[in-house]
Length: 272
Image (cartoon, rainbow, N blue to C red; front, side):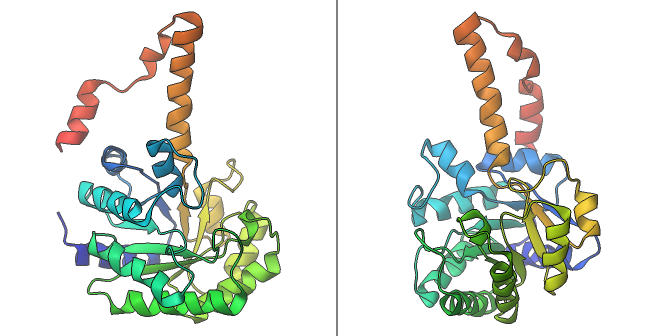
């Protein structure tokens, strides 16, 4: 298994090379190993997927800081791949205090992580949001392993559909030292192209907000550098679970057995 420093270097290199980087989102060790077996080059954690696995409604306070970091540790230890973490808002309003979550994530094996400009109740004031990114960038640079720091502008999924302010924030976050910029809520190619052309650092798009008919190649063509899917794979897995459960309950049927992975397939992945 590569060292954490090697994973960190690889992750940075994969952002710098031509083409688009697809980051699927596992929520536990098993899903991380399954995704690695398919040949993905890096992974990203998901707060929604973790909340689902714990049987909690996703949202502010659904998962504690300690639980989030333990989930990061489990996923990072399960795979040879670089892992990027959804670190919420750092579990603090204060810039320096929020930035400590990057240090703690790196301590459990993570080599990249995002911090939001959302308090749990409101979008942070512009200057405060920029100060938080600057503190995060300073912390990321101080770590003993290469670490890719992602700054998120939450406007578009928090009831503030202000694209001009979103771009202004991303530009300021870039100047403050973020390595990757992320504005959840971008849906169409024209908007993605506008945002990507407005910044100089890699742009992450999350497919749970984007038009699912789009392809990675189409988004790469308009300047998107990185794709993730948030909790969508978790929701897909739970949808299949519920289809099978409903068939059992409502029809006494078991045709869903035909769609399951075999024990042999699972053993082959989990023994590797």
